Length: 317
Image (tube, rainbow, N blue to C red):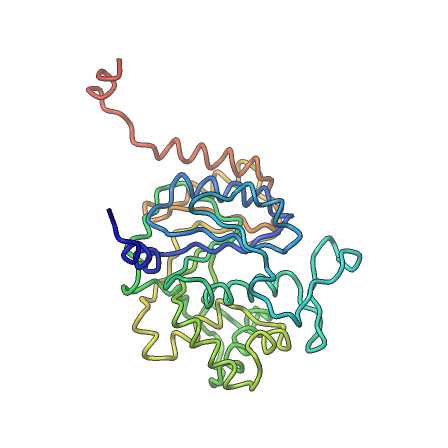
């Protein structure tokens, strides 16, 4: 029998999965959870971070390795959800006397950072709720204290990408770094690995530079990207850079555009996956119907399934 302290150390060193989500993404999150249970191995826990009022919607996903946690567990008391009558396009907002209202998208980014700082794990894999796995993915090689991938795409952010360029600027302002000229590196993807100590150091750096609690600093800036912040911090600190290995791949075939994909387009995109790809994501705002995604993934999974040899088929008869 494994001693309790050894089991606890094992869980701490294993990678934990983080997925911030909400009610409108319930169908997508269902597909994600099913695919994680089917294809992802060697992780300790899968945490779903949801607005408090959505906890009952997601409670059916709870299991020995999956836990649903309310947003309020990670947010300060001064940041409160606005009543539903103030929602715009059914989107939740949070208010405070310290900054302008924060959207659900901002709060999801804050939750990723806060959960990584707070939960009892050294390593995290952040999965958007629109990710679905179609091939087995073993996380054991990313356990602490080994290195983890740092998605880095050099010269990807140009002056034509106004929003991304602003995120580059605010990341450097918050971290007290000189803003680089464009084109600049991008660190945004659908499957991202974070180290807890790096994330805690990043939050401390933001507080030292701004003189504010890191959550308040982000709420005041508003235009920020959690992945840009982490990427630029890890890249510019020698101690924490040594914990990461830069990579240009995430193993996820991604569709970021807004027009929805039809069945033919989706199958064509999945057909572009190579032997190193294990997941797919059509961003939720694309509006690609979940039944189409489910059918395409099942077809892809069937194509990838190992074919039985003649001797194996005979043995089954």
